[in-house]
Image 1 (tube, protein in one colour):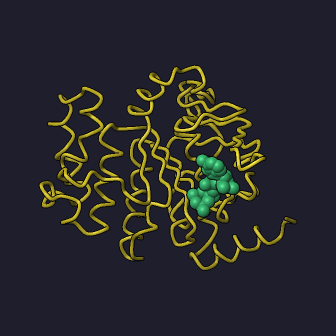
Image 2 (image 1 turned 30 degrees about the horizontal axis):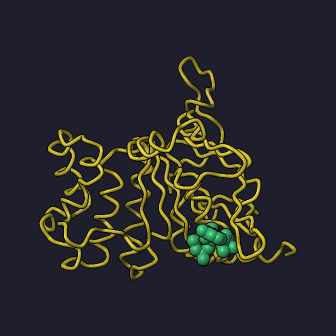
Length: 269
Ligand SMILES: Nc1ncnc2c1ncn2[C@@H]1O[C@H](COP(=O)(O)OP(=O)(O)OP(=O)(O)O)[C@@H](O)[C@H]1O
Ligand SMILES: [Mg+2]
């Protein structure tokens, strides 16, 4: 495996390390609380994470451990109660809601388990929607065809979602996330609705995407067979980062799963 997993900033021009320029995602001391009945739950607590360009990070953890909340906060879909998210050096807290939406549209690609495709639109129309809503129709001609080819969707461009397989729909969702050429792609259980063969193809694709253009990819997953494709695995428990380890230290998903179980089981609840 050849993945970039280092947390150390790459040397900039002249060999001088430049943490801000080379660390596209920096989250510092994030806490997010939700009201639940009379009380509140801390979905994530004091979470800090830095993700390099070209890094493919898998976030694992039990249901309710805060994985989706972390992803949503990194995406700027949810504002944290405490802490900061900096993307390409820009603090999301400094942006108004409107500017944050605009920023997210241009810099972040989102992929969800349920694909969230619009059923009445064709594959090509779904994929180009982020450019249309951003008023950048002029980019469609140069970007759509290469992306359809890249994801093996050229023959499906005029199909609506209900005429495509689950794997094809997921590739449309990934293409939609990539058409804006974001530096950061965030995916929440992107293989959750796919059979294992299609899921593995999606993982290979995500890894290739991270290796191209030093894109940062964060994937939330329950599946060791997905995490094994990542460079780094971050394990969450009760809203905190419990541990992290390199995925390429393991020869297969089975040994990664055994280590994950050890990490999760070894700590007191
Ligand atoms: N909008 C919300 N309102 C209230 N509580 C929430 C909300 N979103 C998340 N929570 C709570 O925050 C905690 C973390 O939820 P989160 O969805 O981040 O977990 P998760 O790790 O993604 O779980 P799963 O694997 O089941 O998707 C849970 O206790 C959940 O009930
Ligand atoms: Mg979740």
